[in-house]
Image (cartoon, rainbow, N blue to C red; front, side, top):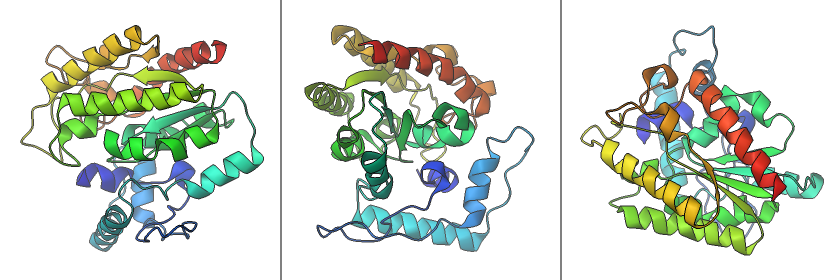
Length: 280
């Protein structure tokens, strides 16, 4: 998702991305280059209440960033290096048994910028990567979830599959990947919070698509599967959707990604799900 990636591709808590443009060879991922400052500033500004327009991004920074993303995708398709150093810090020095990992795409990745307080005590660990699809998230699920030994995992993914970010796909492909994540979590005694996708009726990076029906069908499957498997459901779709399948405009930046008000609406739903998960 080029445009959304450009605005949202930042590491957790704005720390530098590790491993961009570096091939994996059985050794630790070295430190990667920093994201251009103008891009980081634009990402932050989207969630500041007193900012009407994000600061401009220079063409040079835009080109630099796009080259970074291209190298990363060529050399580390699932972005396994992204959180390696943060994961090492977490497992080495933080032994919180009530940890909850949030794994997903840009919606999860941007959440700490929109609502830092939600993540401030370290109990909720964000592991979102902008633009990712469920096969990519499945590849890194063990590294970014299971190896952190959380009490629970919050899975919010699939919208980029519908957009075709990693090629043609079907609803069955998406649901197979979600089921695999759930099965891996259950096998490791990790309670699953399964989130419905946020509504969307268009993608600005794939303007030929009309995804509203597919997103609604996928959200209905998530609800059904969560009930069948006794998973905890975090339903963001229902309070955000309009009758035509689009997201309510007061809650979104671009029709796909939530703004500050959108995250404020999502937070109590997530907190309720977390509280239930930690009781199990």
